[in-house]
Length: 287
Image (cartoon, rainbow, N blue to C red; front, side, top):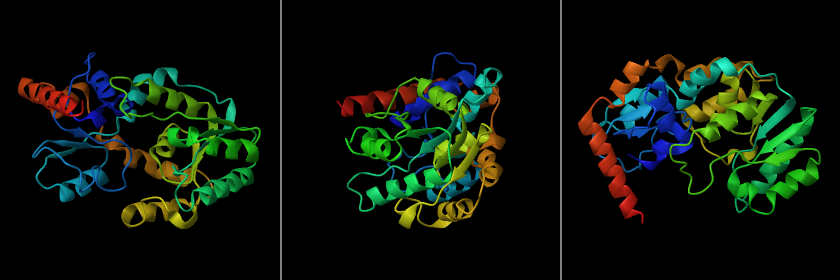
């Protein structure tokens, strides 16, 4: 229904997990990415009463409070369903050491240079035997950030493994599969903000850590998200992050194929028709 349901192939992954091999449109909104509180921002324009599908219990309770006119269901992160599908083939020994996810910084941001420079110093302090830096596409393409990492960390591999504009990769889960395989090929994964990626890496059994982000220019700056940041930044290894990864991803809320079809409304013809109609009108409006 909404284009963000396609991010990272989420709708296709959930279709596979529900034993449906041609992805169905969902009448409702699927949470995209880890959120410390509500799965959807307060100012997001939502179709009245459309169901909201979130990852965890923390997301469910916060979303229900913020959007009281909607039914909210916690179903677990689509990543978890993909992991279950791929698990028999994921016994992979890493060949590299450190994978780094820098917190996204526009070059125009007041502290963008300081954030990256501090992270580079933190990377050196970890004494890695190999380094892969995974930049956001707008940093990878800005003509500056890649050069900074290559000059300061000359042996590092600088790459990008994120969605590119226009951000939606319809019915294509390969990006998330590539991300999983890249994480499994590294012993350690770090970021200087609590991103979805480090939660994934921790769930996959990698030593994942959160590094201090200078001046905390990136959300969340208050509430539960900030409290998590401050706790995890004090940890000296990945144990603290591993203790929360499953609950933050909603592992306790995974559904069976029958349950998933029922909760997403894929057994209902009218909900499928409504989702397709909304998506069609949305596509027409944006062209």
